[in-house]
Image 1 (cartoon, one colour):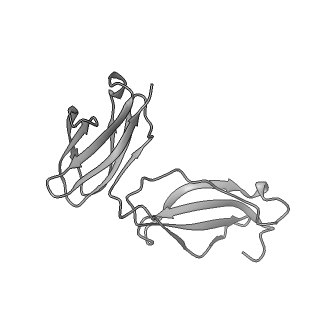
Image 2: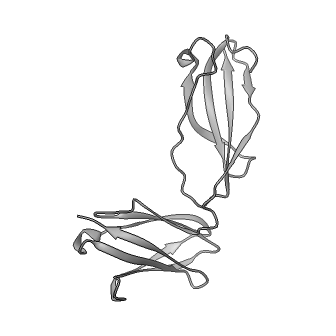
Image 3: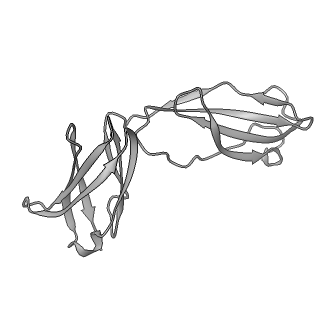
Amino acid sequence: MDNEADAVVYTIEKSFDGAVFSVAGSISASQNMAGTNGLTYKDAPAGNNHPAVYYRVRCTLADGIQVLSKIVGITNSSVGKQLTVTPNPVTTGTNIYLYAAHSTQLSVRLTDLTGNIVLTKQYPVQSGANTIYLDGLQVLPGGIYLLQTDDGTNRESTKLVVRH
């Protein structure tokens, strides 16, 4: 914006398609350091299965007029990686983020380094981005494991470290 002196609030809006936006957060204009464009906003992670996230800022002026910024897209370099696990290392449980091509049953298998299956679970997943919480890992000995997912079409695997 050219003149931010009349700004009351900045609303940060987020979209995964660049067309439909929702409110991600807001910042009071009074936090702006003497009109220096010094505002920052840290967005909560949305998972790693979106190829891009689009942002815009809606500036509400004192007279109620709203002005939209241009849209800025941020690409996700981990999209080719269909499976992400966080936190890793883990103590009790972890989130599995994955993208499913269609709604199906997901098989999750955890094996130790000798190939022994130490955990098997089934989860329903929907087409698109999914988050699954894998719990009960505190019963496993600390070490390195292979986490494998299979939805009948795609098989993915990643290393999982259990620490106590």
